[in-house]
Amino acid sequence: MSDAPPVQSLTAFAKARGLVTMADARGHIHAGLRCAPPTKRFRRWYEAETRRLLAEADQTARAYGAAIEAGRIAASPRATLEQIAEGHPDLASTHAARRVIEKRRARRNAERMDHDANAQS
Image (cartoon, rainbow, N blue to C red):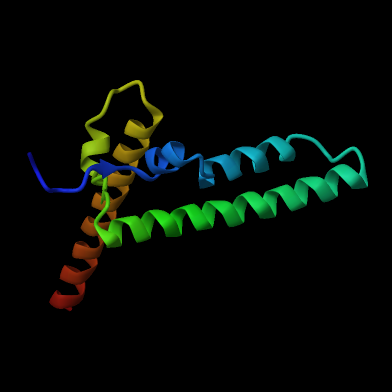
């Protein structure tokens, strides 16, 4: 049996404890942005609820960080851009990662060419 703490993502951490994540807050925000608030009362409630969800999401992130620091859980490893680019070709994230890699490669090549041109001058 291993003594290593279990690997757990922020989402899984929050779900297991019934906490709010930034995804929950964003869902609320985007749902409210679809239409203009019909009344002042609704607008006030919407703004108060948004502030509450953002505050709770921040508390969840801090609790997650504290649990990692205490060694109760281990953070899930983050995927690199290259790993994402090798994903399923139907996923938008795969295409976005490939575009970012291409832009970075083009920028590096342009910087090298500028550097070489300046060095020869």
